[in-house]
Amino acid sequence: MQMRSRKFTLTLIALSLAGLHSGAVGAFDFEDVARKAESQARRPFRPPSREAPPELQALTYDEYRYIRFRPRTLPLAPGENYRSSSCFLHLGKYVKLPVRMNEIEADRVRYIPYDGDDFYLERNKLSPKAWGDLGFAGFRAHYALNNSEYKDEVVAFAGASYFRALGAGQRYGMSARGLAIDTVGGQSEEFPRFTEFWFVKPAADATTLKVYALLDSPRASGAYQFDVHPGGDTVVETRARLFLRAGVATLGVAPLTSMYFFGENQPHRTDFRPEVHDSDGLMVATGDGEWLWRPLLNPSTRSPPSFAMRDLRGLD
Picture 1 (tube, rainbow, N blue to C red):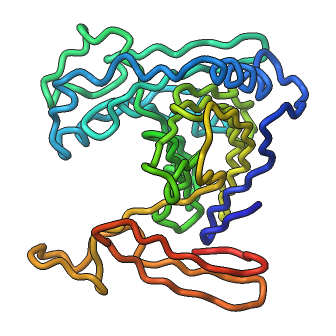
Picture 2 (picture 1 turned 30 degrees about the vertical axis):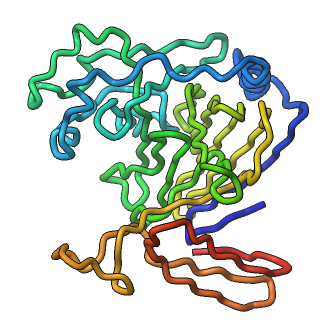
């Protein structure tokens, strides 16, 4: 299954509720994450036991943006020349639940603890000493997409199971999600989240970033593998194995999501801005060569559109 948004491609390589075999890769690989996910699914769901401290949750939008990662070498991007541009994201106002980070080398797995000294916190007069091992909000990796002099952000994972990637010359629009549960058809939507990541330490000449992730929610547990191939067409090959704790009305295995507040076809009554959104419509290419366009709206209740076709070629 492929879902294409211009140059960002999300490919679901494999999905099963039983075992699929994958050859071992060093100290840790997809099968290890799958065993964790299966074991996790056999136990009742446990909500996160801690959130970001109150002083971080109280930050304004601009204050949260003041927090920056201090540049240092991390295992988050392929290639020796631009590894130092990768960074972790800090917990705060909008992402409150911590995520664990790990690095995989040939013969070992190394846990990466939170260290407040890795972030610029001085402008907000924050003192991380009392926070302990806080965890992270997510991560982003950089790559010289558009020219060799500047390392652009190429992929970011932050909050729930959301992630997004860029090809050359692009700006962020839609995001992908690892899993969607009951967006329609159920009593309420459930938001599974990635709780832990493992990064395969890349070789100096690597052109791919490999990341494993563990997903959890009240009704689902899952193992994921992301192979990020940055370039003119940035491709994220995604492998997933899911284990369900309970029944699901609507299971979205390769969902895309975007933000729409208001736009030209639904102007705001008092806001001076003409439009506020990441996307303002959905364009679908059918297998019959037909293009369908549906402008987005911000309804007061859920109003899901639907399309019927024999084959889906792509969407934008």
